[in-house]
Every structure is written in structure tokens, then in C-alpha cells.
Length: 369
Ligand SMILES: [Zn+2]
Image 1 (cartoon, rainbow, N blue to C red):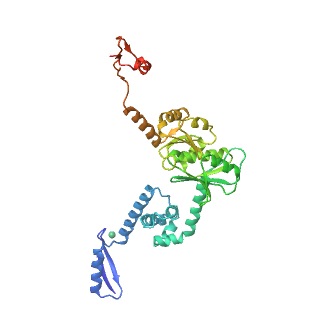
Image 2: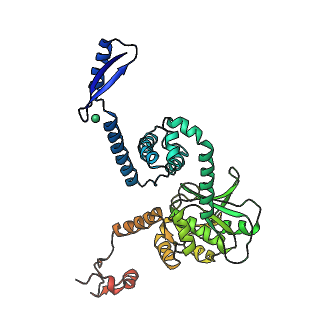
């Protein structure tokens, strides 16, 4: 056994190193190598570890992590392990995958110092595997919490014990109830839903005429609640509007430009069935009734504009275009505001002879200058 000496990189004290079964030359080489690595004496090592642990504890506290439980020494060590492991977990490529946020949350909630010490050598992958059941249970709990929060209950008597679920998708609103219910059917049909065989649910497209999609979801929920149905609606903003009733009601009276088909380029006038507007629409010049709507030729643009204003119809951009086009055409026509007085034909007796046409021209229209 050979003995060598290493200088502590911290305090400079000589540390005695004993090497079993090595020559003094090898021992000497080994000691120089230790020095090149910044070898510390036991005291300095202890101090350095304590400083590292204290810094980790401070960083963890600043990151909002909970206090650890355990002996003072365990806690000190666990803080460093915790800091490193969480850093590793958060920078793992799996971060962002389904349920990973739950995993991160669960790990951060571990407050037993011994848990961190026990798991100090684990890879992220093996940790996920070990915590699989815990993660799954937490995910189920989160989903249930979200469902509960999304539930709106009507006042008074329930029309059904089942929940009508409203789903706001892009360009479409869906609503379903897991039973046949006439009242439900009546309500959703009245606000524009149609049955979708493919998805076995009621749906309505959300085009420009539907206005703000969040308002449509809120209105649907509001109407169903009013009719005595329990409603589930995940969109937070829509839910708040359904409760307060502060949504823009749907504009359901529309004048649009018909594109394609029999009445291409005509106005198409539509309104909800319960509004009695058929006679008024039918009275527009040249109107045709076709498949539930009234069509009016573009020439009647001014009459259609008056009708829309009077009965509170909204105009689509296409319909506005038809009206503007008509107005422009009118202003560009030759304006007949100065009708020249024809030279009077003079009769033999010198008295001007008026033709019947001339006598019918209103004085205002005559050129008086
Ligand atoms: Zn030292």
C-alpha cells in the first residue's frame, strides 16, 4: 500500500491518500490527477454541497415549489435533486404530449424529501412509467372536474334527467341529448339545427349569417335551459354569456344575393317561420316564392332596401352590392332634366299651334332659361 498527498482545491490543506496494491509511482500519478480535478477535503466538500443545496432550495422556493418534509439533512440534499430532476423533466422531448402536464404537476407536488432521494437516479421515462397509474387517475379527475364546471342547470322542473351537450367547433355547432325527446327536438330545430346522421347529433353551420359563434353557443344553451334542459358547455365565455343572457341574439331575417340556380343574381329573402312576413315579401315587385324563401329580381333593389329597413332585415355583402350597383346605374343614366321646347310651328294666322304632346309637358320640366 502506497501513500500520497493531494492539495485541497478549497483550503489548500494536504490530504493523505492511501492506495491499496499500487506502486508509489502510480499513487503519485493518481494524486496529481485528483488535484487536476479540483479535489476537495471532506470539510470543503461538505461546505460546497451545503452551498449547492442552499442555492437549490432558494431557486425551488422562487419557482413556487412547496416546502419539503423530512430531516434537515435529507431536505438539504433533496432540494438539489429536485431542482435537477424537474429541469430534466421540463426539458424532456416528451413535454407537450398528452397528459405530460399532469405528470409535471404530480412530480412538483411531491413533498417528501425521501421521495426525491429515492428517485434521484431515475430517467424521465422510467419515472413516467412508475407513475403511470397516478397520472391516469389524475387525468380522469381533471376531466370530471371540467365536466362538472361546464354543467348548467335550469331552474324549476327538469325536462330530462340527461345532459344536453353543446360543442363549439370551428364553423359548426353541435348539440346532443342521449334520448329521443320531442321538446328538445322542437327547441333545437327552432334555432336552426338539423339532424346529422353521420355523427348522430344535431348540428348547425356557423356561417357569416350566424354572427359570433360564441354568441350562438350561448344562445343555444340559454334556449335549452329555458326549456328545462341541463346543459354542458365547455367554452367559458359562451357559458358566462348563457348565464347572464348577455349575447347578441341571432339575426334571423336576411336578404342575401342568390348565387346559381334558378334565381341567380336575385335577392333571396328569408326569415324564421314563426314571423309572419310572407305577404309583405310577396308584395315586392316581381317576387317569386320558392322553397320557403322569397326571391326578388335585382331591378327591385330600391324596394328591397326599403323592405329590409322597415322589417329589420340584415343585408349580406352580396345584397348590398346589388343595391349599390342599382343605385350607381340609376345615377349614371342620362338625366332628362332639361327638355328642350320644340320650336312652335307657326300657323298661317301667325298663332303658335300646340301639339297635344307639348300641352302635356309639365311646366316644371320646361326649359325656362
Ligand atoms: Zn479543504
